[in-house]
Each structure stands twice: as C-alpha cells, then as structure tokens.
Length: 361
Image 1 (spheres, rainbow, N blue to C red):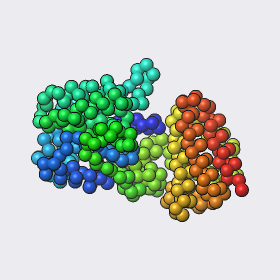
Image 2: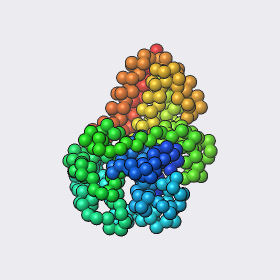
Image 3: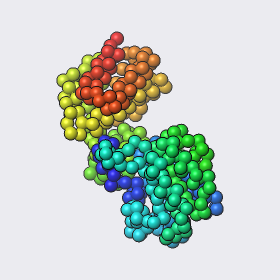
Image 4: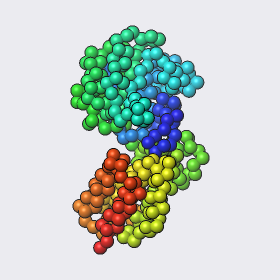
C-alpha cells in the first residue's frame, strides 16, 4: 500500500493487478513486442493517477517473465495472475533483474525528497552494466522521470545512449515537457488519456465496494478521469469537503463566514496540512471549471447538484479576465502558504474575502 499527499492510503501500482481503460496502450506494447519492434526505452505519459505506473509494473512483469508465453491471460494481454510468483516478487521489489528509481527519503527532514537525485539513478547505471541475474531481461522503472534533477537525467542519458542488450527502461512522466529533450528523443512515447467518469466509478466499485453508488459516481466526476485521485479523495473525505466548498461559493457574494471560520479551525489540527492542500486543490479546480465553462459556453457536469448553475451565475458577476486574475492569485497564494509559513486559516479567510469582493456587482 502507498500513502498519497492527502494522507490517504491507496493501492500501490506495483501491487495493482488491474488496468482498466488503457486497452489501446497495452495493445501497442504487445504489438511492438510480438513484431520485433520493441524499443529499449518507453516513456508512459499522462495525468497523475490514471494508471501510468500500474502499466509500467504490468509491462515489467511481462518482460521479466520472458514475454509471457505461458502467462495467465494469453498472448493478447500483459496480465500475470496475482498468484504467480513473478507478480508477488515484483510487488515486493524482490526480483534481482528489476530496478526501481524513485525519490529518496530525506532522513534529516523526515520527508520524501522533492526530486530524484543522481545518487538515486547511479545504481541503475551499474545495474545495466551487469548481466541478468535470473532471466534474459533487466528492467528499470523510473517513477517519475519529470522528478529527476539535471544531474540525475544526465546520468540516465548515458544508459539510453548505449542501450544494453535485453535491457528495458520504462519511464513514467506526468509532465513530459519537464523531461530533458535529450531523454525524450531516445524513448518511444506511450500517451495515456484520462478515463471516463463511468470507468473511474467502476474502478472505485472494485477497490472500495463500501462506497455508495451515488458517491462513487460523484467521485468519478470530481477526480477528472483519475482513478488514483478518486481513491485518494474517497479516503480523505474529499467529496464531503467539496460539497462544503460548493455550498459556500454558490451563495456569493453572500457568504457564511462562521462556516469559513469553522473550516479554517480544522487547518490547525494534526492533519491540517493535508486538509489545506485538499481545499486548495478543490477550490482552484472549481474556479477553473467556472472560467472554462464561461469561456466555451458549457459548464462541467456537476458533481454537486446545481453547481453548474452556480458557476454560470457567478461568472456573470465579473469579466472573464478578472476571474482569471483571481484564479491565478488564489492558486499562487495557496501554493506559497507552506513555503512562506503563512497561517493557513488566515489564507483561507483571505481567499474567500477575495471571492466575495470579486462577485459583488
């Protein structure tokens, strides 16, 4: 299991046997493998939480099993059953021919580092210099490539420039534009798209059957096509918090400041940082949806009943240019709060005050 930035627990990609909504991507990988056109390095791109790392581990299991000639699921699938020893060994990172490159843990600050360092990559370079210990292939997964600093990227580049025989590098990239062009140009790109809300709801039903069907449907819309995001929101109480926020902004310029103060008081508790980041994410999402809807004349499918009408009404209270400016200022203020050690409750009060002022005729 893994913990995300909201503090919730979700199924780790290396432990996840299911991959829904990416049949075309899986077919492309299988076609390249069976057709003898399999690249030595792949970059799997797309929004966070849609299954990129899950696909990376799925591909790694397949390749480490020498292509899956006798795999569960047959030649038309990358799938390996959970009862297969290969699945369990990859899930526990106990396969000698698999190397995973991720952000390391900073013991001095007691938190995960924000970027992948050259020291994190160096082992993978020496890893490919050796022969396979157990089978024919050696596989490295970089999760995520856009988190590597310059020195780490340069170290990995040396491996890609002289790819070893039967060596495979699978890179996950949330924002591929942040990956140096020298790396991107040496990878075959596989782009994954966000999933339909109905499919996200189906994945929720499989992993969280305790959630009511109507809540799963709402989470499917709120997660913007990301099953990982939907699961994190479910565990963090994100839907209830979103309903609170929509209730507050729907009545602007009238606002229940007592309710805002109560919400702000929760930010001083032990898990206040996670709640604050969730509020920031949900509120900026709502504002972005309102602005996009006003620009194109069609508002997003509502997560909360009536929020599309509230967006339309609020959009008419100010110019599109003004609301874009407010969205940018609110986003930047939320982003700067932890770095500048600002008071979270006061930031929340300032944000709602700004929204109230902007929405007045």
